[in-house]
Amino acid sequence: MPPPQSPARPVAFNSRRGINHGRRVVLTFASERGAGLKQFEHELLELLPRLRRFARSLTRDSTEADDLCQAAVEKALKRRHQRRKEARLDAWMFMIMRNCWIDTQRSRRREADRFVSGDAAEARAMATPPSDPLAAAALHQAMGALPPEQREAAALVWVEGFSYAEAAQCLKIPLGTLTSRLARARGKLIKTLEAA
Amino acid sequence: MIDREKLMAYVDGELPAEERAAIDAELADNEPLRRAVAEERLLRRAFAQTYDPALEEPIPEPVARLLAGTDSRVVPFKRPPPAPPRWHWQSFTAIAASLVLGVVLGSSLGLTGGGSQDQAGLGVDGELAAALETQLASTQTPASPIQVGISFVGADGRPCRTFETSQAAGLACRAGPEWDLRLLAPRGAGAGPTISGRAALPRW
Image 1: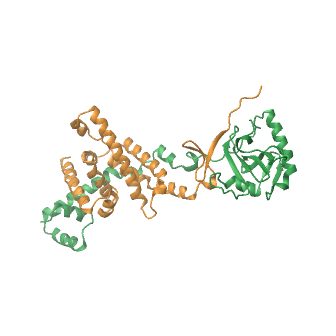
Image 2 (image 1 turned 180 degrees about the vertical axis):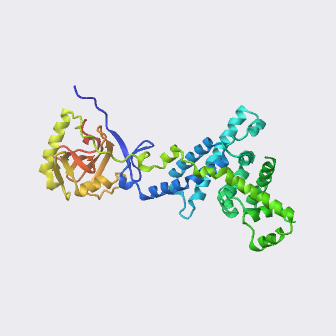
Image 3 (image 1 turned 60 degrees about the horizontal axis):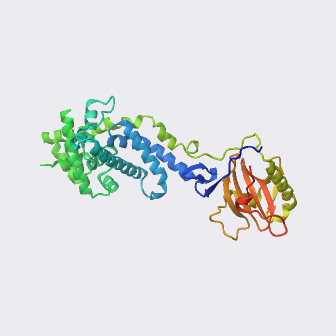
């Protein structure tokens, strides 16, 4: 009685990733795992605290922010070859994150349309970050109430410290559009802070 | 009268030097302007107060795992287990034959370096080892003296590749940092069975 046989599984060799089983990488030659990927991962790791801060300013709570971080990092790892050499890593990453966030917003809107009225969805306040002082909580609430295009402009400039020109370039909008979005956002935010 | 948008740009350091200097000069005697600037600065401080704490928090574990490199996302070649693989009796016959053939054919394969014997079987080095290690079946040219066939993971978890030269065909499996020759047969009529592709796979 021969022992049970497990059939050999033919797999494809791939110069970059070693041997692939479907989509999952299971084996790779250490020599083929380029120093480039390690360097990229290292740079991303260093950028992570800022990515997380940016995510917090866009999302309702820390759980959602961490999910957004994870989605953005996953996408960046997949798309690292698409990054232009001259592109700043932070700007590139923020835009990946912003696009992930926009996608989430869209699907949430579709979900909200199905389950709650538009007004109710809008009234759903952003969860207050724990242990934040009053002003911080008020600001976070107010950020959540901003339209997405104002919120992302505010986050890039006032949270991440991008110049107006850098933020406009990131968002691919004219400088004047950016400043008017910022001006509208600041009006609403200051009003909220005054009331807090 | 300084409009709100200009004031915002002033606080954000976005105004040209001369406009900035003009506002600086006016601030001394203009109380409403001072209050408006203070209000703007309060907003910037509130941003820092609200979101900067995120910079100090530990990195979420799933994200750290994503960036942990070889530790999680990619599994490097593992060394084979010390226990011998389960052999089918037919495999013994095939391997025994290949050992004999390997020794006999030895230098006649046109492979510089040839094979070297060790306890695990016939070790592979030189040109053949280089081809097995680096040559892609999809990109190799017909002119390559060694043609790599298919690659697969054997039942014992080792990566294996078939290969052919003008005079022989064989199967080698990775053992630690080296390749072990598992099967070798001469090619061509009269010289014995020709082995290629999946036909070269032993049954284990």
